[in-house]
Image (tube, rainbow, N blue to C red; front, side):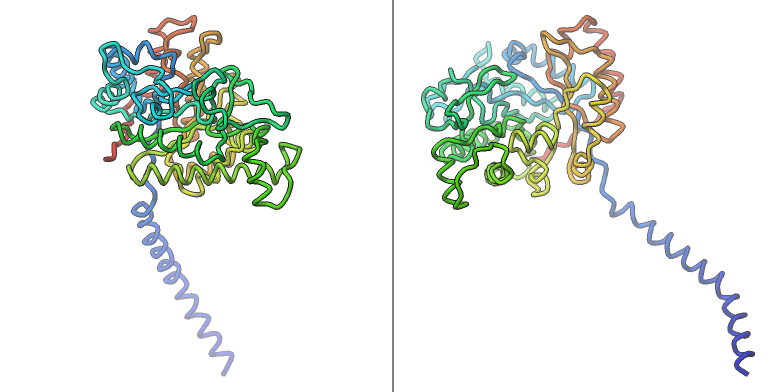
Length: 397
């Protein structure tokens, strides 16, 4: 009796299996068909260029600004990053700087016009975003008015020296842990982002502190008070590095809140070095900033002449992680006056970035066309072949 029952059930099961398989297949197809509805939309490719002090002759003339913006629009760029803070000076009329005793480096254009306002207006007419670049961050030359007038705002190394050598020459470093420094930087950033119809603000690798610094009286006393330990003599001591990096992170959180409170849709952009270097040697924990959701776009500077080294840096796990949440790109060297870069190198690096879903931002505008053995026409043709179709970035009020 039991044997006959089992055989009957087996025959029924064999008949049901195709039906069950079909139901399973249809269910899987039905569920998967909804994925495109909830999947994240593709992020717009960042195609940008920094405008530096070297570009100031262009920025001061309205006709040249119009010509430059129109050229970028024709080449399908979508973002301009103009410098507004460099060498301890601002590049726009600033009440905050005036109260601090700092004169603007460039106050007005040749027509007496506001340079940043003019660039922003003309760029927006052509459909490009303008994200001012707070280039020097906590860095300032020892000859600047800021260093001369506010010496108590600057930090030092363990041996008491206060300067380091950078790409900009000899510089001093504002103490990022000092409340007056934090208030000064915050006031400048809020002023620039609210006084102008800009689309955000960008901070680069100088919104940091070289690991040798932080041995001033204010910082060492604060560290001892909070940790109950003496300050390590080794500037790369993990606890000492972590404490200082966390303090800079806390300030960046406050800075983000200050900007977003007044301009909620402003793009909070960060352009650091690759993460391992940025954290260990500059106390800049930008990956944690991204995880804290205070970064709206990331442009990692990867100035490498050799393609293989360039590809290694843009393929790191942290780059892939960031791409899952925010628009990301790579800072690409377009050339320097004493170090030209060929259009072939530029094209190869942009292609490598695009293949990995990354945008490209060039350092800097003038060197896109000048300081090369190639003609302006050759370089323009090469750039036009990189961005064959528009990639407009929508403005947000």
